[in-house]
Length: 458
Image (cartoon, rainbow, N blue to C red; front, side, top):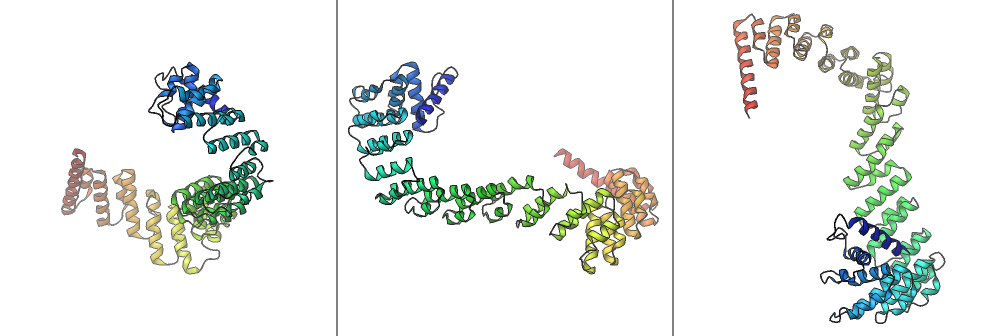
């Protein structure tokens, strides 16, 4: 019945595709089998069997069988002998045509017409029996191994012991694979001894189906084991399993599946991979608005980042910082680094007042005032950092008058020079009263302007 449905689908594709691609509507089908199915459907639609006679194509019997089913004339298979008397394997083609037709129509009477190929006859009865779920048809199979396998395919739960009676190793493995999937029992995967790849697939599929990660460890192919872990992780929603995947490709796929769904920040701590742990924290911290949730983060660095973001959003750099970020459960010698990091992240120099070490406090002001407004520069207690703050503000605002606020002469001239070069504005140099320094300023601007022109020409 499945094959008949497939045939109907191909008829539909051929019908819809003929007008758009009249010459060869079947050229895009993958593989000889599906291509011949398509040509058979096309031949039946046009009532033209000669479409199946192209000697360049393989599996001609498939085309004939599909045509026979389409026109409801099983004797078409016999024409493989009369239309092609010179074919060396004509009799075999005829038998295979009837086997294919039996499969398409789920009709055992066509299996009886197979005269020369016993294995194809057995296969025909087996496929029809499984489709119709009639164990009586299995009795007509000559090969004892194939007969047992036929029983198992129809009722794997009741006939599992028959696999042990099969002598052919490959057929026995296929039998165990069928029973394992029917009963959801991986012990039958263990019994597969010859077909290694199929045994690995058996473990992989059952691991996901019964949600058992341990089965993945039985897979001998590392790449397939990674895929197995990936499927189990998704099935049981366990992000920590992603760390067990060796392949960077499948590991990224695993984490990318979970990260958008993570709402509990404690789950980020279960991720060992530093890059994905960082991505997890960054994604979820942006959604945290409660300092108590920040406290659930196991990583000190990301807990600090969470508090810092929250402090920045609420403009609270006093109690929240002292009590939550840099005060609680932290050695005194580590607090300066904490304040420096928070101040740098938030670009707010007021936090630097809590830094005890003189050197660290200066560094804190230097980092925290990189983007400060000119009005804030005056609050910096260190002159050299304050002057740098004014220069950065003058360049950022494109306003050289901000340099006028620098109290010391030489630093003020350096501010004019830096601003003139940054803005490529030679006129700013004229604010420098000393001719020597003014000349250097003009030279620096001229050189910067020449470099820029050279880059534009390139």
